[in-house]
Length: 257
Image 1 (tube, rainbow, N blue to C red):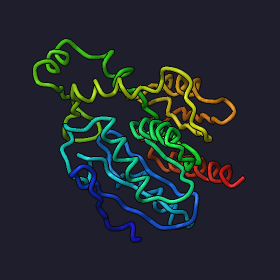
Image 2 (cartoon, rainbow, N blue to C red):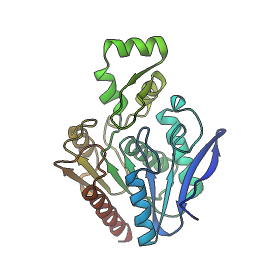
Image 3 (cartoon, rainbow, N blue to C red):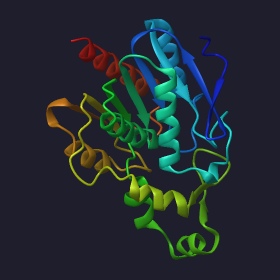
Image 4 (cartoon, rainbow, N blue to C red):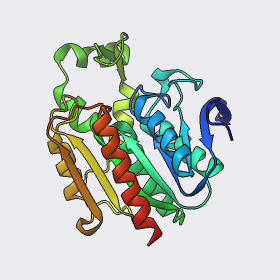
């Protein structure tokens, strides 16, 4: 399969775009962040790594993101989780390592939970980059201003300037309410696989204390936390990419034992 050109599958009447590169197991599944897409720096680096190493890789865009259909404002964690589970089930075989960035790390954790419930033991590892599980309840809602709260009540959403795009970031009431139903930082998290977390200590969006909280809820003997003193939220510099790929190689070596 040529990963240079997007393919599509239908999920609930919405076209979900993906790029897939065939290869050996374990494969890698990329899960992007809020308003990011599968052509970002880290996702492209994973694809190039897969081409060199011969491992399979799958990337997809959530609805309202990148090359997928649907409206961004209609998105929720539950919806994007369902699309990611559908991509995993339809487009991968054998053991897979889930690589989640920011919100994608939340999706990865929820995928591991849902797949375990279904008796699907194909998640061989989790690589979480600047992980933002529960960001709606833990990071956004406590910081809401009076104007933003009023906008949620009046309009069903509020907008804030984005450092990563010329367009503002939109947060809907549906997203916040659904986020509460998908919280994972409420107790011990059983992933049933090794986990490697990479977190920048100069991340203005997700404080490194959030990663420490996540780490404290994971099984200690299967978790590695790498703190990057000068790392930001993107973690897209060459040295950050090298760390990501090194961590991925480590998880693959663990999966082969």
